[in-house]
Length: 468
Image (cartoon, rainbow, N blue to C red):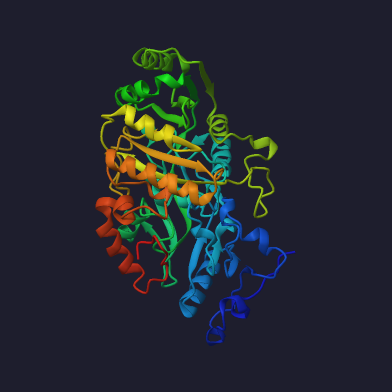
């Protein structure tokens, strides 16, 4: 059984007797030597299993979060929040850090006015289930065990983005404990500078969010689709896809998926907000442009929740949408891969070169996720890539070892940068990204640093790729 201890008494965080009497608040603390520590410290990625946080604080209230920040400030201890634990560089399970596990902040309240209040510890599939049960939906990601916090704070690209925008575009307000320990409400009218920053300024910066309020949409059926094409058609597909997607209605959001090797798997999949009869001519047009019949073609009208299950490759009723780690009680397996990104900020002028980058990146799967539509018309937020045509994500398994995977990933990343510019998506953090601050934040960087200095002058939330 996990034990509850006062943070004052934690040897893992050092001697903090000077704070005695200031607070009687305790949190559920798990530290090295506790039976639960081995599982509690784990994130999604297996390659970071050897990392050893100083302690994991399982918070259940904003007051718990305030207490953790109080201790971190006093002891100058690194502090970081963890929700789903999907940090690509493993920052949410960092060596020596106090990990504030917000999974206990799991409340979901779908309101009669169509907004939803979501605790910072909610995972995506749990949110989708609650929304579907209330006849609502909203744009978010496709991984069932990703946390709503990291997704929203970095922007939130998803399969209905062109129709409904980014996840952060739906944010009405948030509650956050800032580095001074104050629990603040931020919105368009309260601390508007921080509200701007939280919508695209990246996780780990500015404080620890405890809850969000989002605008939702009435749930409707979605048509999911996948067209697999012969490997030989890859360059042609890459040459025609941007114009086809760019001229499609906002209801259509698609992804080009490409494997590696001399004969890679090639597909176009995605989501259409509407019925198959209205999608069919659009897909027919893509096939005509490619000039090659797909080897397989699938179109299926589904409920919102069924579509989210399909994109997450899991089923709600068999436990496969829930984590198998950190007491998640489910059967979803963990990940063993590294990843990087670039934004498709300009047209593909050399589709064969792009095809070769994908094919020649060993043990990789490469995705081009369409943007535009509602994303390009979105509100003024810190997300800097409103004009991008798409995001490009390169994922590499660790089949040849992590060091080799990162070397190959770097080659692909840098070649893509030469083609499309030195940009990237902050939710796909790459610890070796050159000039990472400009790549991830672009024109928003100067203002983000000003906000960080205003709310975190003492650099409490400082990490390798942090704003401060």
